[in-house]
Amino acid sequence: MIYLDNNATTPLASEVVLAIDKCLRENFGNPSSSHSYGLKARKAVEKARKQLADLIGASPDEIIFTSGGTEANNMAILGMAKKFHSGHIITSCIEHPAVLKPLKYLEQHGFKVTYLPVDKYGFVSPDSLIEKLRKDTILITIMHSNNETGIIQPIAEIGKIAHDRGIVFHSDAAQSVGKVSVNVNKLGTDLLTIVSHKFYGPKGVGALYKRKDLALEPILYGASHEKGLRPGTENVCSIAGFGMAAEIAKKELKGRVQNMKYLSKMLYDELRKQIPGIKLNGHPSKRLPNTLNSSFPGIMGSVLLEKLKNEVAASTGSACHEGRHSPSPVLKAMGLSDERALSAVRLSLGRDTTEQQIKQAAKAIVKAYQSF
Ligand SMILES: Cc1ncc(COP(=O)(O)O)c(C=O)c1O
Image 1 (cartoon, rainbow, N blue to C red):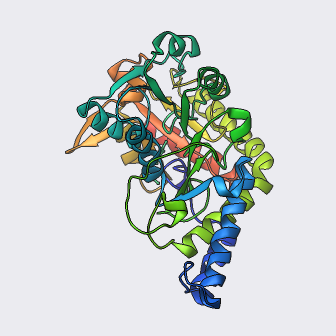
Image 2: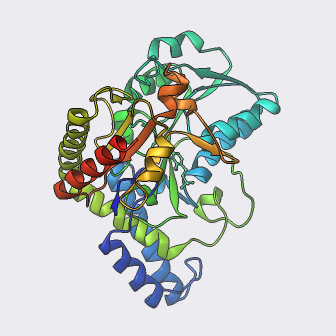
């Protein structure tokens, strides 16, 4: 079985497993306690905060630990909305539900939201963003890269537009951190979402980067953990694992990019040779090096994956509701027909994917496709 679903989640790195194991055995203290057990746990949390800050070019006091990407996105969007009470927010129509749903909630409570369209590659246009700005625009939230296509948005350009006008800019970088270089200073983001399990850390832990001088309202109420922004005793050992994942990502990033780019190109070349009419969804180069979203002519992606279920683990771009497959809103927003969107399969490689696996996966996919 070859695992090509690394955008859904990644296996834990062995260094991460060791870090969590050591922490679970040796570090049960409450990081808020002032005795030595507490201090030891606090040290583990603060070490991870620094490891994560180092990965994204932030300072440790700009990192707020959360339960994952969903919470970090909610914290950024609802927290800004609570600060302003009303106003206008700009986003794109291809965001993850963890951004779209809080925005829908805000619309029901009087906020105005503009959903920017994307072009055939899946890019938001910075010019169309400028056109949609209003006097009461309080927030721009645009994802760094898309989970289905891997398309990387022109975030630095958008960051500059936001800053020139004093508008707060949030980016959901759940899929990007650990796969490509993400530096908050180069990008000009005020808020950035990071998810541990997308880069070989544990699930149920994430972080929101918040620029030091930015004020944000909490969305949860309790004690004063995480500078009063995220009350609740910290998930110490998962945070320690998250920190370790960040440290490894920093060391390995260049090699990961090169390797995944090489292997995903090899995979697509192999498929293209034997499946005439296969189409890449998204831009050929401006995307995550590990992500290959393609449409297989004449067949539903879900049917192809069902056939491959004992050989290749991947996913379709479509959401399955009550057993009925509907075309992916992300691919539809790029102007793809229902037929092409429904025939899409997302293959996402990981740091441990090998050339041998890619060859084997390509063979299995071609064989499954030709069997119909
Ligand atoms: C782009 C994006 N944002 C947010 C999330 C949510 O992360 P989590 O499931 O850790 O809350 C995901 C996870 O799939 C994602 O891909």
